[in-house]
Structures are given as C-alpha cells and as structure tokens.
Amino acid sequence: MYGKYVYGIIIGNGDTALGVRGMVGTSLVYNIAHEGLSCVVSDYAGGNFDTMSKEELARCLVMHQVVDEQVMKRHSILPVKFGTVLETSDEVSRLLTQGHPQFYLTLLWMQDKVEVEVMASWAGGQVIEENGAGPEMLPADEPIPPVQIAVSEAQRPQSYLERMIDFLQPVSVDIQYHPPKPGEMAVSAAFLVEKANLDTFHSRVNQLNALYCNQINFQVTGPLPPYSFVMVEVIRPSPEAIHKAKLLLNLDEVAGEVEVRKAYRRLAALVGSDRKLVDKLARARLMALRRASDLLVAYCRGQTEKNGGFLISIRRSRSDEVQPPRLAEIGA
Image 1 (cartoon, rainbow, N blue to C red):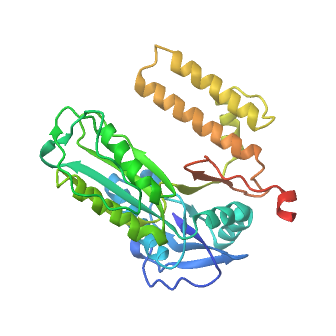
Image 2 (cartoon, rainbow, N blue to C red; image 1 turned 90 degrees about the horizontal axis):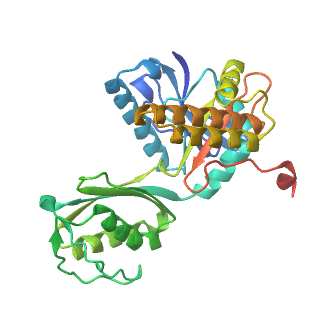
C-alpha cells in the first residue's frame, strides 16, 4: 500500500519542520498546503490497515498520535481519522479544496483548545458513600478545604462521575464522559479546555485530590489533540457502495437527506423490536444501517466531485457533523 498518510489539518502554508518520522518510520513528516490550509502527511509504504494484526495496529496508532502531539505544540490541529491514506499529493490538495469551508470553520472553533483526560480510581476498591449529599462544589476561583469523606462499597461510580464533571465543567468548553461499566472501580472523562485555562483546570483537579484525601486517585493525561471532540473522516465512495447503501435502507432513489434519515430511523426501530435478533446481531445490523445512512447523507449534501470526489464527515461532540456554509453565507 503506497500513498500519503494524513495525520491532521492545520491553518497555514508553512513547513512544520518537525524532524520526526511518520508512520512505520520510513518518511519525515511534512505539509501539503492549499489556500491557507495544510495537511500534515508523510509518505506511506506499509501494510493495509484492514488486514493488520492488533499489535501492528497498536504500534501504528501510537505513531499517529505522536505526530499529532508534536504538531499540536505549534498549531491547533484538526485530527484526521487513523488509517487515512490518499494516493498522491494531488489527491491531498483536492481534499483541502473540497473540504476547505468545513475545515476552516472547525479549526476556528478549535483554536487554542486542547483535550485533557481525567481518570479517577478508588484506592483499595473503595468508593464514595452514597448518601445523596456529597461534597459541596465551590466556584472555580475558590479553593476547597480538605474534607474527610466516608467511603462505602455501595456507592455507584456514576454518582461520583457526575460530581467530578460538575466541578470541572466551569473551566471547560465541552465534556465527553465515559460512564463506568457495572463493577468497574474507575471513571474517566475527556475535557476540552482553553489553553489559557490549563493551569486553572489542573488546580481544580489538585483541589479534588485534596478534597477526597487520597481515597480517590486522579490521573490526568494531556494536553492532547481533541480526538474526543472532533475528527475528520474521508471516504472515497464508489457507485457500487452508494448502490449497496440504497439497498440496505430500502431506497430506490435518494431524494434528499430527510428521506435517508427517515429510512434509517424506520429500519433501526424494526431491528430494536425484533426479538429474534440476539444483541450481537442487532448491534451489527444497526451499525451497518448507520454506515449506510452516513454515506448517503454525505452523498446528498453534494460533497462529491465528478472524478474521484470524497465524502467528508467531521464528527463533532455537540453536533454530529459540520456542514459547509451556503454560498450566500460565504459572500455575506
């Protein structure tokens, strides 16, 4: 498999000059620029990601993240989904041309924001007592006095996760939390934080450590690229893929996005009500319906070019996709 491996998108035409090697260590990372935006890429001559072992995928994922984190030290980076390879530099330029309005608007939204992950685990298997009260959360600019908190095995981690989020939310832009599974003794959440507020955010985490008197251990990872909040996915659909998606959603022709979403919701509801389907099969069926819906929605939005155009999806935590502005809005 040969091509240009894409790590992310930044504002600017200049060379990143990272001096770091990219995927599989064969090529230095560089930029391909177009109209004020640049794709951060490296030459790729490795295996197909769809057929790699878990160990190989893990190594490549680490390389991908290392490059993004190095770029993040100098630029706000819009992450591109792991495993994205385009064939040539011209294809990379076409991607920037086609997605320019979306990429630029999203980068403006992300400017000077980073992701910080916080994990809390209970020392000795203990968790906070569930009594409905809990510690009082003070405003972000007020310190918290150390308080001894009673612990009990009966406490639900979800309750504590909500308290942690409530306390850190005032110094965050957005939050993606990960509810614990039954029996797990740790909870985690990703916070989108303004760079100017990082010191205040870390101070709040330190105050939580003091509040819970070492009964709960907090681990902070970051700053990181905002993987939990925004991600670019690039698909090059074939006519066969569009046809299969229509068949899966029982659509002869696609009139518009509303029609696609109605078909998806109707079929998803049928899957949920079919008691003959076991959970694993139902999840696989729902995932296939969602992929078909996403493909056709992007197709309806006119994000294809006649010769090898791309379907570009930008996942956002608060709105699933960033839609390009209309021409009238651009000219306003």
